[in-house]
Structure formats: structure tokens, C-alpha cells
Image (cartoon, rainbow, N blue to C red; front, side, top):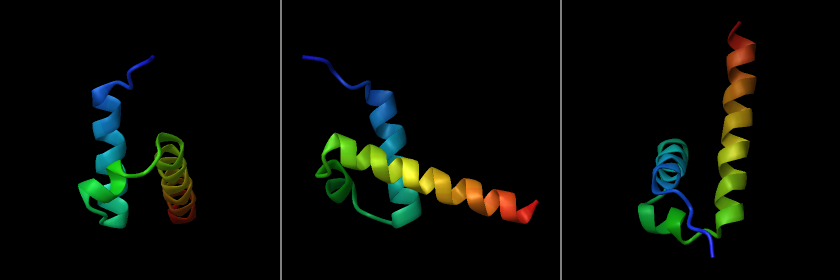
Length: 54
């Protein structure tokens, strides 16, 4: 069994909470792959917005 690094978990939770304003419980209830997908999608949105400002 592998353990997910706690620092990375905190980063993911903070990132999703900041952008979606979801509660800690809502974010932690997500399956790990689903949470990672939300993180990736938020990152793509942020990248696209950043490129549009340039």
C-alpha cells in the first residue's frame, strides 16, 4: 500500500478550495483520481486565461 504525500494532498485541497470554494469535506470525499482531474482542469483554465492576457 502506498501513502500519498500529505504536502501534495494539502496543495490539491487548497487549489480546488480556492478556485471552486468547496469545503474541505467535499474535496476530501472525492476519489483521488477525480480530485487530480479537477486540479488538472483548473490548471488548464488558468493557463488559457494567462495566455489570453499576454
